[in-house]
Image 1 (cartoon, rainbow, N blue to C red):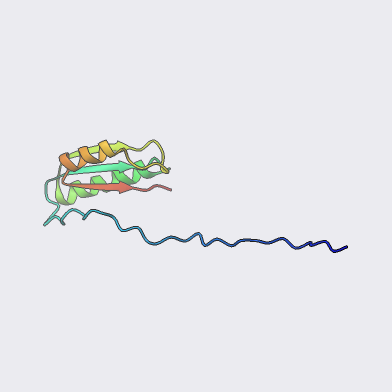
Image 2: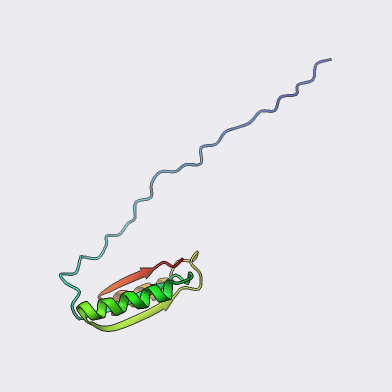
Length: 100
């Protein structure tokens, strides 16, 4: 009597092709003087403190006319598309802060 004891394994390639975004980035600003700044905090430890220091420095060097602040509920979740659209309308540039 013959019993087959070897198992067969199927190997799967988990890689994918690169995803090319279907949009273009905003044009670069000529300068940062007296601009409206958007800030997205990823809610990690120290992100808020880092962003506060950064916006203070930007205000000191270039002047900031307004700051629109948004804190994400979690670092692992993307910013709400409505918030991103609102910031795109109301801000000249946006900074996304990462803590830790």
